[in-house]
Length: 147
Image (tube, rainbow, N blue to C red; front, top):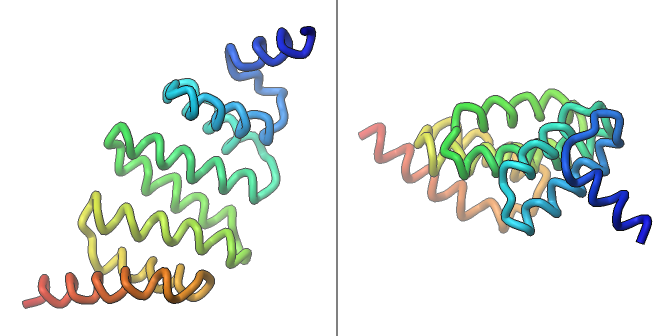
């Protein structure tokens, strides 16, 4: 019972002294509850909390998803690009960000050449079969735009 009260208090508002992993877990819980504003608050706290790179990238992707739901595509691009800086030389983390950028650039901003570049970067570190259809589709879109 005491633990439930404690967790309820933590879920009521962002406490900046909490661990970023806790913020991310609370953001995911808020997502499941369809409380998207609370989820965004906790995801932003997880992203900016100085946690390990994997948690920070997970939070970055969640913030991007939530901002995309609000049609804040420029903010999505900004946070995903800043996530690439955080991922640094970790190719696995970077691949997830490149894939998210490819999807956003293709479907929301319709910047096909940039989407293709990110899809190719994602494919280098992800399963090529998963990315090959996206790359082929983007190559076709780029070719049709050039004509």
